[in-house]
Image (cartoon, rainbow, N blue to C red; front, top):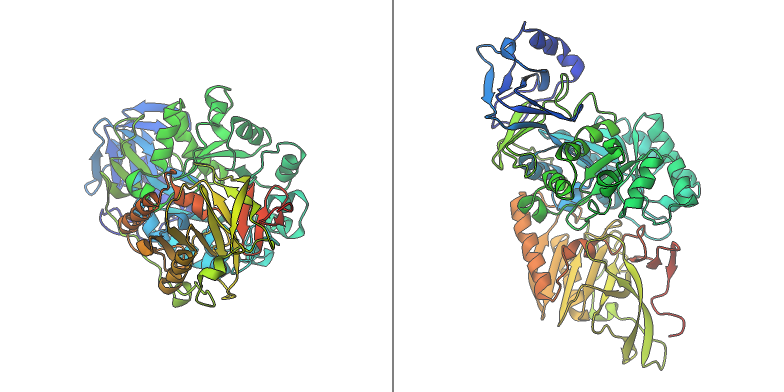
Length: 607
C-alpha cells in the first residue's frame, strides 16, 4: 500500500481493485482517510467548473471522497490539511515527450518536474532505442516504474526513423513491439515517424501498429508534412491516434476532424501552441480532442522555467480559458490513453495526484501530491527518486573506430573549380523543420570552404566504429571566428553531429567526446570552453538536474560566445540528423532531401 509520510519514496502502488474496499469504506465513513484537504476550491475538469468549499479525502493513494463535507472521513490518525482558499487542481500530464531530451535519466527527470506540478508523463524512449535497442528501452521502462509519480512508456516504433536513409545502433522490429506490449508500464506505441512508410502501406510499420491495437493500446503519431490532402488521409487510416507535429491552425483542425488528438507542444525550442490554439479560442472547436505537451525540454528549461506548468500558463496567455487549458493538460490526456478512470481528475477512485495553487492564471505551484504523497512544496522536492543500476554496456556507446583528423572533414571540389554551388541545411529558429538552401562557396586548394553565414557540418558514425563521416554545410547559427561544437545527441540515430568553422577543432571536439563517452563539447580558438558529459548511451547523465542544467547553461553561453544568437540553439543542432522532418538533413548515409525521402549530393550538378 502507498504511504503518506512526506520525505520518503512512495511504496508499491495499489491498483483500484486492491484499494476498492478501503475507498468505499472511507467514502461511507466506516474507515478514516489517510489525508483530508479542506478549505479549498476543487477544479473539476470533468465538468469544467470550480467547486468552492469542496473537500477531498484520500486513502490508499487514491481519492476516496470529493464533496462538500469530508468530516465523516476524518479519524484520529488522519492528516488534515488546510488549503487556505487555494485551488485544488489535478496533477499535470505531459502527453508526449522524450526523457532523454532533458539529458537526464528517468529518476532525475522526475525529480526535476514534480516540483512543477507534473505527476504523469507519457514518454517515448526512442532516443535510447536507436543506441541500445530493446534492452535500452527496458532499462528506461524499469527505472520509470521505480518512481513516485506516474511514468508510462510508449514502445518506440521507428528505429531507424527512415529505413534506407540512416543506420542506427539497433533496429526495432514488430517482434520487439509484441514483447514490449506485455510489459507492465507500456501504454502504447511511440510516435510513428515513418509516415511515408505508413502512407505506402509498409508491412513492417503496419505490423507494429496492428500489434499495438491487438493489445488494446494507443498508437502515437508523427505526421511532419504540410500536405493535408490524400497523403494525410492515408496516414490517419493507418492507425495513429494523435499528432504533435502541427505548426498552424489548419493542422490542428485537420487532425481533430479526422478523429485524432491534436497535441500542441511548447518545448525548449518548439513554440507551436500559439499558432494552433486559435482553433479553440477563435474557431470555437470542441477542446476535448486537444492536448498540451512538451515533446522536448532540456534540463535548463526544467530547472529554470518549468515543465507542464509552463505550457499551461502559455496557453492561458494565448487567450485560452484557464479551465480549458487545465483540461488539455489533465483529463484530455488521460482519456486519450484510456486512463480516464485512473488519473487526470479529482474524482473518486483516481490516483490522488493534485496541486495546490493560489491563482488559476499565473499558476504558482505551491504544493504537489502524487498518489496521495506530498512530493513537493514551494519548489522543493520532498521524496526520493530511485535510480536504476545502469550497466557498463550502457556507458560505453561512443565508438569512433579511429582518431579523427582535420582532413576527415574536408569536402573535395571538382577539379579546376574556383567556386561551387552547394546544398545547405537552413536552420529555422524555434521550429523543427529546416530549409533547403543553395549557396555559392569558394574553393581553396581543391577543398570547398565554409564562409560567411555558412558553417561545415559532419555526421560521425559512433555505433559500430566504422570511422565513417558524412560532410555537408549548414546555415543559420551565426557562428563567427574559429570554433566547433560536437554532440552525441543527434536525433534520432544519435551518431555524432559536429558543426564548425575550423576543421582542426571539429576533429578535436569529436575526439573529445570519444574520450568522455558522449555528451556535448564546445571549442573556440583552439580550446574547449564547455563540456556536458552524458555517459549513459551518450544521451543522459545520472547527475541531479541542477548540475546538468549548470553545465548545459555553460554550453549555451559558449555557443553564444561563438556568435550564436538563436533561442535554444542546441535543440536545433541536435535535430540536424532527424531525417523524417523536412526539408534537408544529414545522416551517416549522406545528405537527405526529406521532401523526396532520398539521398542527394552536397554539391549541385552545375558545380
